[in-house]
Image (tube, rainbow, N blue to C red; front, side):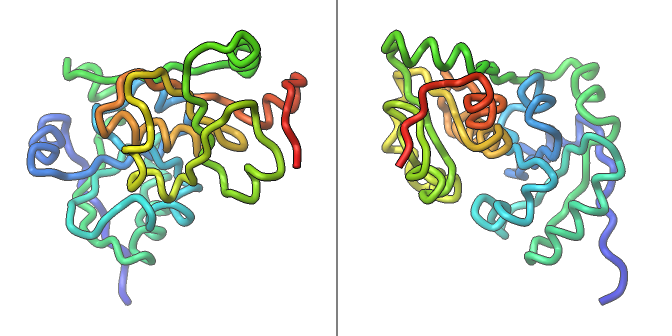
Length: 213
């Protein structure tokens, strides 16, 4: 098959132009890094989640631009994507998010919700949507009170089931899928979006009341 393609390093200006041409920004960084600052409209898929979820979330009709945490992530991401047939790899953000930030271009953020804050909101019956995006088997085994379940792979097709007027906290097993879900919601115009870093694992550690099968 020869060598894997080598995406071009792109400046913020080139990426802004590519976005206008409907390129999709795939952010490979950690949930914590993505939540702190990201290019508006980006899709967060932490590098190790690409093999499991790229097929659900990416199409083959648009160029892909990568935002890595380090340059070492690029070859691995390319290998994953090429194996799944994604060959429209237009490039990556040269200099990472720092380059985007110092260019003066707008960036977005996602608020992080600690497990204890989540527990307090549930106990006080605050009005919000707790969106659990784990697999149905995980959800049936253990869940938080009044959680709404939509599997992450189905989320883009079921956005009309979620009330945009309510604050939303995305939730999963450890927070890695939750940040993907939060980025999907932001991409589709949901404004009141937060992410539960740590998610169920953190809730288990601090003793949240968990409903079990």
